[in-house]
Length: 214
Image: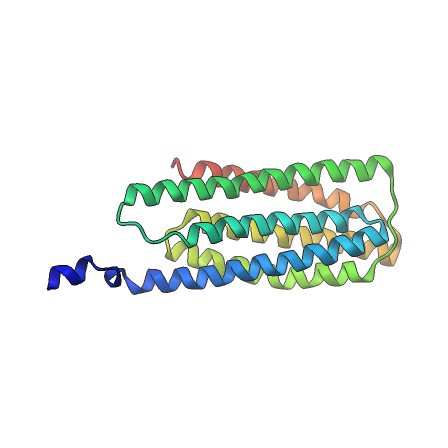
């Protein structure tokens, strides 16, 4: 009887199960928030002719992709086969790393194009509000994901927390760029700030990709 209970599904440790449920709730919120943020940012960005704001919206879509990858990963049942569990973790971590590189490439291309074409966007107060809200929300999400990722021993979730933090850094660049343009007329500030973010994105992407080999 004792052996039957130990081999039954109810014998799965309760704490990891509850931690996974908390992590899933965070990822569902991340995806929902970023889809809404993307729609609003792209709408107002196109309306104002702001490449930075449209780019921020596209970044939110990539964040949604990363969140979707983690939802797929976390919904996988706990495996008794540790080797299989490890393979799933490596796959998920590398998929998250790829989103870092996609985002870095996009930021570089759009920043250069904006500087070369000298396209001056209209001033947009909604864009400033969007950037401010993201700056308030994303660091909290990143901190909670990192905490759960460490407790679950999930490099994929920790990597995703870094990408959420990257979104907060992008919010700073967007807020500075739109804010300076709104109040002083300096339209190219966000493109210059974005180059500093690219270094962060590439660094974290490489660490996420190589982390599973260490």
